[in-house]
Amino acid sequence: MSKCVLITGATSGFGLAAAEKFAQEGWSIIITGRREERLKQLAQTLSSMTSVHYYALDVRNKEAIDTMIEGLPESFKNINVLINNAGLALGRSSALESDLADWQTMIDTNITGLTNMTHALLPTLTQQKSTTVINLASVAAHYPYPGSHVYGASKAFVAQFSKSLRCDLSKHGVRVTSLEPGLAESEFSLVRFKGDQSTADTIYEDTTPLQPKDLADIMYWIATQPAHININSIEVMPLVQTWNPLHIEKH
Ligand code: NDP
Ligand code: 8X3
Image (cartoon, rainbow, N blue to C red; front, side, top):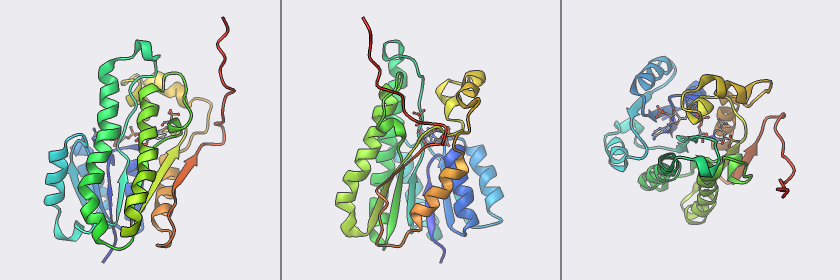
């Protein structure tokens, strides 16, 4: 029987590329996200390669997650890999000019959504031999920048939660990885700048950012390591991205 991966946020970017990669490699895939039409189209495309199950849900909705899991067709019940990829940044202005509702949405999605899905799948993951959780954190988890406030903090949660989970899950054969990318071209910036395409485009202008396929290849590599290996974390940037000196405010 083929192995099965569940991917959150598979309607675009890293999640969509991961669905393509695992499908090409013959895994059964469960794809989720809020935009049902996109899931349906992706499922149609990938079903020529492998078995695909799609389910539209918002990771913030714990009941929807439970319903999805309860209703999984028999052949998709034994999930081997969970990719907690759904997430977003909203805004990049200073904390002083930020919208509290945006902060709450990031907390609800990046933290509560990720923990909702993880908690719901722990029984499944621990029932089987050698399973893997891949959590999408970010370089923003470790390196603050102006305007990163709640987004960066939410990803710091993901990075630390991943390590903490390891302590409890290793005896059950569950591996956990925090994947921490830098600049990558996807719908991420369009979402962050609330549909402002030209501002989103300036982020990637004159750079060679990471591409979703790069991250999908890394996810697949993590998931297919020998059972005794746990990749704790991977921080990956495009060549063009490095660090600034620490800022000193002059007065
Ligand atoms: P995209 O915006 O292209 O994709 C984000 C995905 O998350 C979409 O499929 C979206 O689906 C899904 N999503 C967002 N909110 C929810 C929700 N409430 N419930 C369910 N699904 C949701 O961005 P990326 O592919 O770039 O981002 C993927 C992950 O990687 C995110 O966690 C992001 O923070 C992280 N990341 C991104 C980096 C980048 O530079 N691009 C760098 C480092 C980390 P839908 O809207 O259909 O629900
Ligand atoms: C996305 C990368 O640098 O925009 O997590 O925060 S960054």
